Length: 210
Image (cartoon, rainbow, N blue to C red; front, side, top):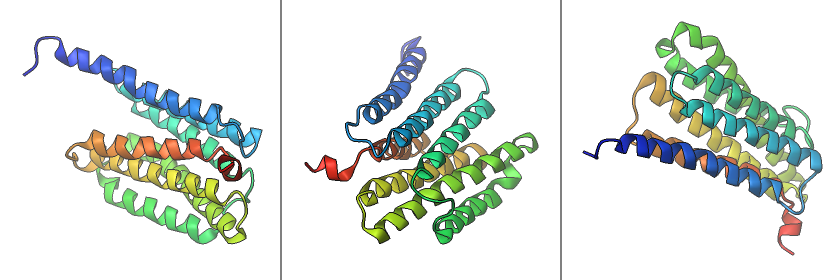
């Protein structure tokens, strides 16, 4: 066992390092020299900013789960708006449907374990998250088929969006259904690559290779 006060010391380390990691990801997107567009970067930065807010809310003492959920929901809305900068909504319906079905399957497994007061917020969040991920995958599919300069950045965004779904699914399972061994490792181990890939999708691939 640690010395008295050790737990508080570790808490302060988490409260400092976890938001700092997201701030560094935001800085990476902000300083990308050749963005796809100013609007795309602005929307991604807005989403990352809401993710940072969600990180902070979920770390605060007390139950800030719903406010944190709302912050991440706004993050996904912002990411969805970024994907719509160069693709129409549900550009590949099969990708959108696959993500919706994955979210629906997880909700079906968790539903009986979610408190009634949280069911509507969780349902809305799952719908928005799946829509964001489905749009990202459909957008990547579209640009890959076209073979244009946005194919690689769109692929990074899609992989980031899917990892975000995995991270949130692990978090939901751990919170509502069954505690996962080393849950923080799995949740954060998918979350930070997710936002890193989304931030990395801001830059143009053709410019990166020069």
